Image (cartoon, rainbow, N blue to C red; front, side):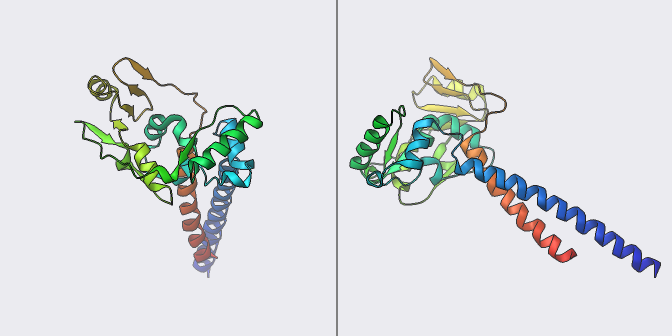
Length: 225
């Protein structure tokens, strides 16, 4: 009897512990999803166009919405793409023109557009020794995939600062390191970020990981119930 009571108490403690863990994960997930829905990491103009533009803009989301990046490469891809990551995807140049007019009317500031119909001119990128093409670690889906892949062509990732510096002496193509430093030719190097700053792709990756953990924890809680 004592053994059965001990087993029951252990299961109860495990159940409460898992339940607490699940509640914490769900709270974190809600917070991140609200952050992503509000496009908190975007510039004012892109956020406004994505949230409030008229129907004739026909925006399809941002470039970031179409990307899935391998874990560990988020910072490099985000640095390499720069403002392109939050460009608004639209079907045609006419929609881009309507979006620009909307931004001007609202005095929202500068905003970029990626035109989905303009994706047929892809040119295969030649290889550069020691570098990884961004397109190798950033998978693109959806109706604007071809145009986005064209935009990603000629962008590279280096494993270290020194590898990026050496390659930058041979090409003007943007090269990002895993730390988020970017070379644009031999003369220009960019980098640095506030410690508390979050990236669009980092938030996407964390949301995905927490959703997977939530499902796992739910299964454990159900088994212990």
